[in-house]
Length: 75
Image (cartoon, rainbow, N blue to C red; front, side):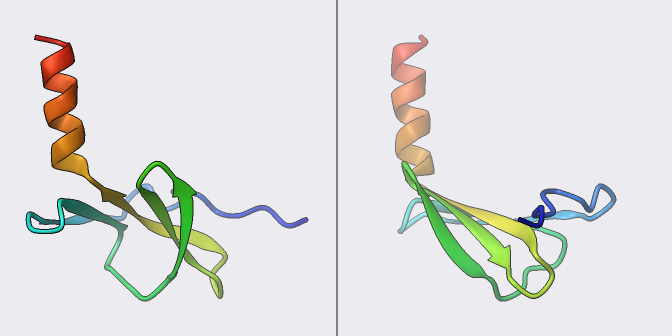
């Protein structure tokens, strides 16, 4: 089984966008590009470029809600 490149682009800029209505944070390693979304559970989707065989981003669902819950537990 061939290894998958994970965060291999150390010099690549981190691009992000937050959708407040959907409470979703989109992170891209380098310039955003089309990719396959792989749901790994708990509101985390890994975006994977099949051709390059590398992870190109993450989608985090429910970020605001998670932060609120964290703040309630830790204040």
